[in-house]
Image (cartoon, rainbow, N blue to C red; front, top):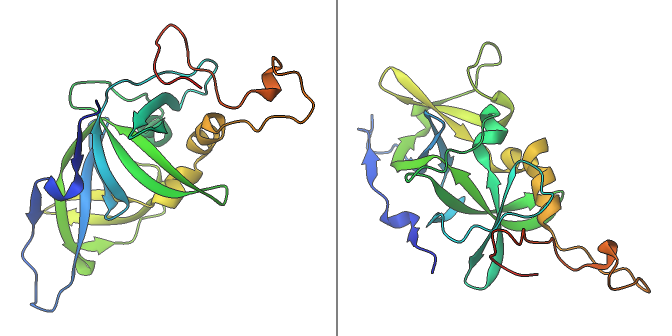
Length: 206
């Protein structure tokens, strides 16, 4: 059984608004490596504990494997690898964010492996600034804004840009079932209907 939490149940933190009319926007603050980042809600549907992850034979580095979510094969993508080039920590604090987006113009429900989840933070538009184009210590092509928290800042991911990154888009493509080839030998690798699960790790079967 996969342990899961709805995002609504996460710890929430707010900062004082400068005016009663200020509209707040909820964000889920996560950890990639040791750095904080955020996703706008409701981009994140739920948070899963990493359980029953089945690696795929020959998968690209950013495809961690598959998990079963209510009978659905959920591809798990390595977000830290796309952001900073390092694999996710697989520590006890690591978890999976279930998101929905579009990859190569096709809708997809995916899991993003992250190194930890912190809280839900409500920010007003005035507390979010544009991304600097020079000397940024993060992957600016994946970021849509910076939320100010005291003297520090939290980069906010753009989900569509994240899923369009070369590492993750290749991982999504590798996780998709392969359509059978008409007239092909069923034993042909091109005629298979789904990626093969690494038998050494078990897990969901094609």
